[in-house]
Length: 128
Image (cartoon, rainbow, N blue to C red; front, side):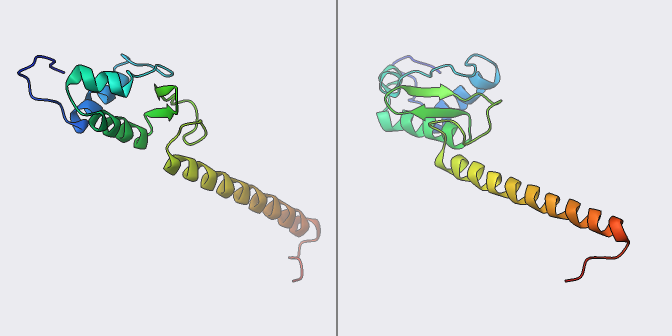
């Protein structure tokens, strides 16, 4: 991003795109702390809300997590979405829902195994 006084000020979308590119290229790796929003806003000559919006975009995409009082960090892609402190609430809700679905499928699989053993045991389906 251009930092000269005459350059146009970057938008939240442009700031997010730059960090997205840096994360993809390994400039910022898992666990790396992104610059403090207030300091970055001052450096870029933009409002604090602009940087916060950019970080919010990255958070909603699952690229970063925010820990209150600590900062914004690049999320480790090896850790399931929504399981880390500071994850997007949407990803946290999705992780919970997926966990419930996984448990239900496991229970259904167990029931199916029991039914198949019963059928194989005497050759007739169990009475209802």
